[in-house]
Each structure stands twice: as structure tokens, then as C-alpha cells.
Image (cartoon, rainbow, N blue to C red; front, side, top):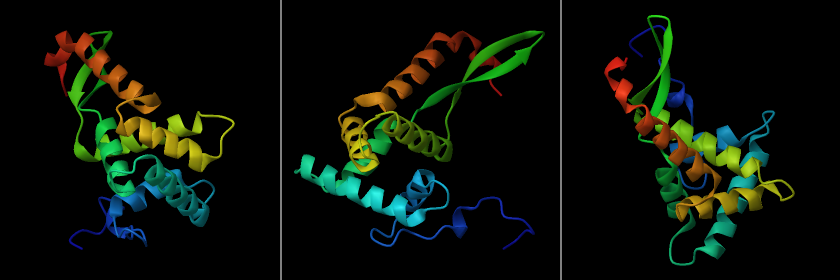
Length: 158
């Protein structure tokens, strides 16, 4: 520990108990509501079981990894104020930001599927993202379209 303060909380995060993966642990933390980690873990692992039944040719954790990779955006737009006007400037997305957006979009799309248990909704969204479909993929495509439409302002990049 070189400095007095941590620059990231990720070293404090322990890998998940089943797969030993920090990304799975981070996803479960994002899934968690009101500090109920055991409930979030149960929802995640149950969703992976359902994914495993639907996609028989691949391991369910590999489907999850590919789904997250498919949803990760390459570019996003950020507002930049230049001389009294606001411009939507396209910027590249770093790996941690891309992962965070992918997690957020997948969970947002799963929570938006009303009338289903969360494990089923999450499984549906993961399979859809694996197949490059669904709400999270639409969000990614919209971000890419916005960046493409505003590429004339790329010279304002941060």
C-alpha cells in the first residue's frame, strides 16, 4: 500500500465462492439490493443454471462472460461546454468503465422485465445479450449511434 488512500475498492473485493472470479463478485455486488448478498448470489447462480439449460453447447459462466463482452460499449458521448454551447463529444470507453456500463445495462434490462422472477429475467437477458439481442444490446447500439452521429465534435475530446 503505497499511498494513504486506496485508488480503487476492487482490491478489497473477494472473488466469488464458486468460480473464484472478481468480475462475478463485482456483478453480484451490482445485483445486490439493501445489502442482501446471499439473495443476490442465489439469484445469480440460479440464473446461470437456467442459462446452462438453455445454451447447452457452452458452459453457463462462459455464456455470462460473452454476454458481458457483447454489451460492453467501445465509445460513449459526454457533454462538453465550449463557448456557451454544449456538445456531445464521443470518447472511447476504458475497460473498467465499459464493464461497469455493461453490468448496469444488463441488470437494468433484467429489472425492466416485469412479472418474472429476477433469476428468470436475468437468465433471459443474459441469453439475449449472448445472442446480441435484448435491451442491454439496444442500449449499447444507441450509445454507438450517438457517438457516430456526433463524431464531428470529436476534436473537442477531453
